[in-house]
Image (cartoon, rainbow, N blue to C red; front, side, top):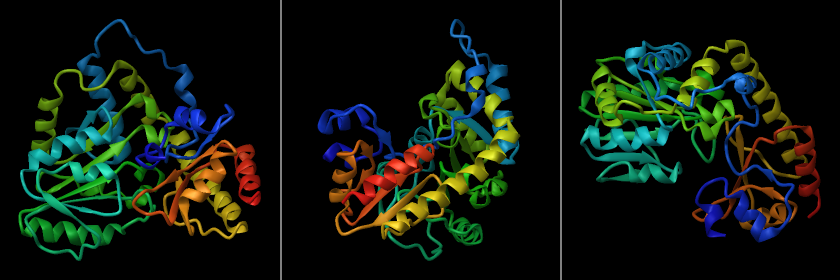
Length: 324
């Protein structure tokens, strides 16, 4: 069980433990809506990525985020950006919990905090918005107040916006600038349903972006990541449609959960957290019906469920929850 409590995925491990091969993986927050243009992209595997192509990717992403390309750096996944920027800021960290387990590994010194009241401290405050695993969204107005207080004290605000594409209104991308002590991390794969591409972006002041570029070297991401990302971020029609579809599917999941006495919590449409007497019991029950979810060793009273990919998957979840 320990492997399933560390992060989502591990489908092969689940198959080995519980049997069966027709599994539904609801253990991650990755969108079940895969960007439809993926089959039309044919990356050139024979050559190293060209600088112009990398610049085009960052320009397409910057246009999507609403910032100047000079403030955007492509990286192989948003977690890589966090691991780079933590040491660069060279100050103690605070990270809001509960959240990603790896957030506690970003800073050389610091401590977790359950609440933040906008204190003016010379620290780097790290949080996820939308948060994982509970899906809470901190209003942008409150984040701007925290940013102002941190800036007055010489601190930084670092926001992991890996799920922000599904909740565009929560992003602070419009606040990025050279005079702001603000760094954002964005993920490509979670929203576009292509986690295996391993692509993310760091947004921040030009000075921070330049340091990250130097640390990443000439070829920070693959030719495939460049090709997929550049085309996907330009596909405004698909992006807008996906945001609407995710909301509708999340509402359908909420209805199924409610029918079985479960309150689906969270403002991120890619997953829901439910409060239960014992999350491991419900995890086991669903696993024996070939449905993988995410339990938490640090909080046995909750379980996270990702968004089912279609009506058939939602119906299977419905039947499994009914078969107590």
